[in-house]
Structures are given as C-alpha cells and as structure tokens.
Image 1 (cartoon, one colour):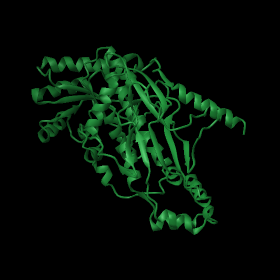
Image 2: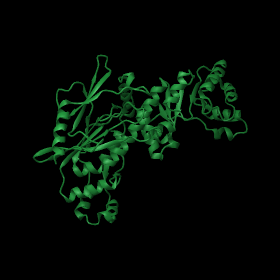
Image 3: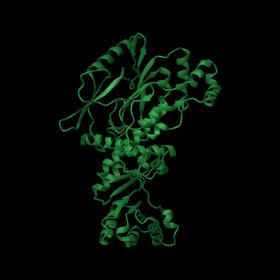
Image 4: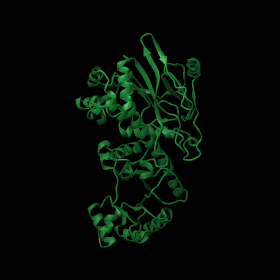
Length: 453
C-alpha cells in the first residue's frame, strides 16, 4: 500500500458548507438511500484535446480516513445555519466513515470530455459530503498532469523538470503539482518535499544570488563545483552569458551542465554549445528555463536550439494559460428498496446523462486508440477495454495502488497509443467519443418524463 494511505485522519470539514447543510437535510428527512455520483469534465480548456487523469491516490486516501473530530462537530453546532438541526445529526457525524464503492480510471489514463473519471456509490450523505474534496483533488492534479504531458510532447524526448514551487498557489499545491507533473511525463522536480514524499527525482542548480555573493563569477563557479563536483550545473546569465560559458570551460568534462535563464535562449544556446564543443565538452548539457511553455519549447526546437533539458515553472505548475479544470460531480442514480431511479439535469448547457456508466475504448489493428463509447455500467457486448476499475468497496481499497513510477509508465503508454493528430499542441483533432445507443435511448425516455413534470 502506498504511503498516502497510511496518512493521518482527514477532516470532514474539508468541504463546502452546502455539502453539510444538504447532509443535515438528508438526515432530517431520513434519506439514507445509496446514490451514485460521477465526476467528469464537460469541456476542455483552450488548446487541450485530451486529459491525463491524476489525483486518485489522494482522493482515495481522503475517503479512507475522513471523519469528524469532537472539536469539529462542536464548531458545526455553533454555526447559526445549524441552529435548528437535531442532535442526532451531530451524533451521526461523530460516527461518520466512508463506506461506499468507487470506480475510477487509473491515474495516467488518457480521457476526454463527458467521460466519468470517477464514480462514487455510497449512502447519499456520504457521497455528498466528499464531493468538494474529490473535485478539488482530481481537477487540480488532472489539470497539471495534462499540462505536463503537452510540454513533454513539445520537448520531443528531451527531459522536462518541474520548477514551479515558488509560483504555485501555496506550497501544498506545489507538492501535488510536482506529483502530477511527474505523472504527465516530467523527469523530476526542484521541490524537495515532493521528492521526499513521493520518491521523485530532484534537480537544482545554484541561483543568481550564489554568483552575486562572490567577488568574481569564476570564484563562485569554482566554489560550487568544489562542493558538488559530480552534479554541478552552472547558471550562466548573471552577467555576460557567453563570457560565463568561456569560464565554464575550465571544468572540462567534469562539468555536468550549464543553465540559460534569460535573453534569446535559442541564439544563446547555439553560441554556448559552440563554446563548449570547441573545448571538447560535447557531453556537457544545456538546460533552458525562463517562463517556458509548450509553445516556446516547440519554437526553440523548430529553430534547432541545442537544448538538452527544460526547466518549466510557472506555466506548468499553475497551468497559467488555463488555470482551472471544470470537472463536475453529478448525481446519476438513487437506489430505493424497490427500484433504481436514474437522475439527470435538464438545465441548458449543463444537461447530464443518467445512470451509472462505463467507458469502453477501442483500438485499431496497430494498437492505437480509435474511439471511446460511454455506455451504461451494466451494458454487455461493448467492444474494447473497460476504463473504469473498482478501486474501493465498502470503504476499503480493493487492491494496492501502483507506484508513481508505474503510473508514469502507464501515462506514457497511453499517450503513445493516442494518434498524433489528437495530441498536437495546437489545432488538434477531436477524439471520437459517443454515447451508446441504449444509454441515449434511456436518456431520451427520462427527458420526456421529466419535461412532463
């Protein structure tokens, strides 16, 4: 079992107030039926053509440990909104544990709009209370894993390192951004706590302050290399980049790399490469940074800039061009003793499909993904591979989760099977996804019933 599942108790207050007011309302009205909710993304952000699912491990860790402490319950009792709520509800919260079932796409799976990334089936109150945490966790990590996959695609096999901790929306976000970026294909992170917590490779160079702290640039270079002889990457642009590159040739083949962080990266990379090669330092790598994204990286490589590694910070770890993913969590079924009632929204532009679902993925003769079908969960006869797996039953994991390295490999294999026209960083084609005939028929029937109410 991964370490995340040995984590301390998670607070039931990690939710929005309306989840708890609805829970109190359900309890007062004796609504304890099992219900199914599904999380999916209606529309992709601009320039996105696919998603890389991420965040499931943290979501399951939350479900595995969520509860309410006595102090948290006292806090809720004191809120004016709960003034008329019966004591029995707070007694219920004191015993609260998630006891439901979860089906989900494994982390690293490529997904598309409308497809359930996760399905929760649990007593109505339980399934409602956990909504906010699940959305927050999976939306964010899926957003960053997807952005990372786009950047790694643009890098054309060159390593990408996540550098964004200082620009994230708080350090907790930075930790999980590093994790998600690794799932999306990054080779490592500068974030040391993320490295420790998740076993990620960590990377770093000295900053400009190191060079400025010494009287001469060469003194700074020598002092750093003396302490880190096998791992030094020298930052060249504190003063004169090309002069710094000439100074760097003193270290010969011992120097692991140099970093360019400002100016015309493409032109400088070519000039620095020439200086290093002339000194016989063909193995010394050039790392580029400075507000890079997938488009800038693609432009650099199109211009044949001899860059070996990319450090990507703000644009990756905040997904600055599209900083939020609009995943939603919608009720699709309620189980009564004598029947199962499908549920759907009819509101304009936000209408949903009822019933619990499964996603089936077909591949062509070469093993490349060709189309997806969203069907009812109990439909038989659908071709292809079922993407949603049962990962939790009765509030307990059904099996140990894969390691993060295994998840990254799964993501790489998934992306390798997605044809190129569907993963271009701009003007990508839309991957074919359709609803099964039976699901479409059931939805049409239900719409007719609901419109008559």
